[in-house]
Image 1 (cartoon, one colour):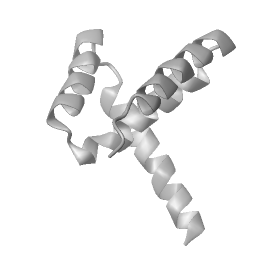
Image 2 (cartoon, rainbow, N blue to C red):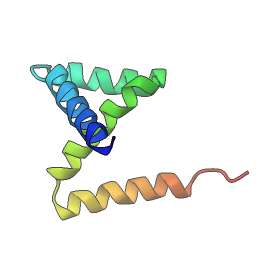
Image 3 (cartoon, rainbow, N blue to C red):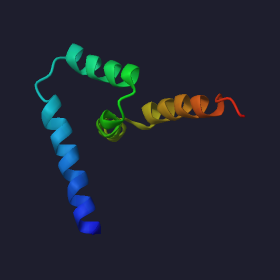
Length: 80
């Protein structure tokens, strides 16, 4: 089953990137904005794949900046 899960993950990565290939900057930004605003659960894997590609192509300073923003967001969540 693990091999199949790996294959599915690779298929999803490939599908997301193929679906966005050839899109304009505005179209990709629209996809991101719409996904965030509508909170579509189905689109979250695509957002994760986009984040993964950004992370992989980022240098240490860029990653550190992203981590600062992530940690700030996590640490500023209300506790109840």
